[in-house]
Length: 154
Length: 178
Image (cartoon, rainbow over all chains, first blue to last red; front, side, top):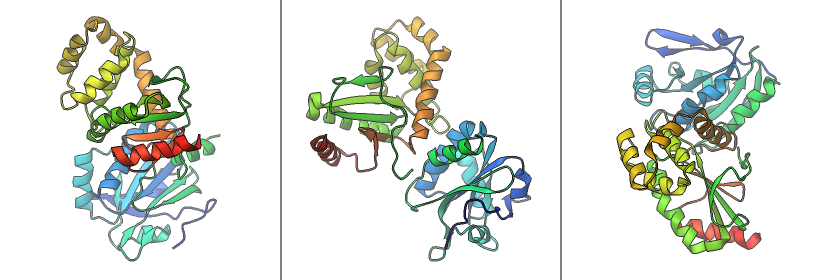
């Protein structure tokens, strides 16, 4: 499955962030958005990756950007995960139909039934400006995200 | 990302051990409260011993303050100790006592090291100390530090095994190419 190309419009989606609340990509128009697809809550590498973004959030926000995490885990799992790790950005549940948004973004792993570890940086007009597909076991860090945001704001 | 290089060159501003012009330069981005960094601490000591004058070791701050509540303060205390010429003494103390990094314990360590505690506390509150830690952290992020500890060997991120034996042979291999 191929990732979406830079310069294309980011497909909109609307997914639950809490049991009674949904978040749509289109709500973020006017802001840059970092989409973080990751395979699963609680697996150690994910925790490290999201923990890093939690720490780096002030640097990301300086670029008029917000972080959105996405995995196929259910919303109750996300809630507990977010609470325990104190994440300060929304984590959306791409649960029903499973992985639909990951599939839209070419970031779904059919064999495992999870999303890839993939990053997208989307500009304030909703255009994809950068993407990165990481090996599943590797924490991709935040340098690519910040380089991309810096380029957008130049 | 895949070929992560140190974006902030090692300079006089850095805390380092070993000769300034050593052929091998090992930079660690670390967090005093991180258990993995605590595990790496004696390994680095052994590497320094084994490589002697061939190794320059630099420590930079990468406190994961959202998950380690005392990490940022500990980093500031070490930087503040530097202004009294005891950065490495405090660095070592913090890793040796990393399970106890609360404010009271930090004060005790400072006393043990013979530091002027009042001056130290004053320095900890200074913007320059906070900026120093922040600058280290931001430089680390831009260089592809994705967790702690992250090591760079002669400017290139080392993604290999950092247990003593494999790390030593990796360093020797780089040394052979210098």
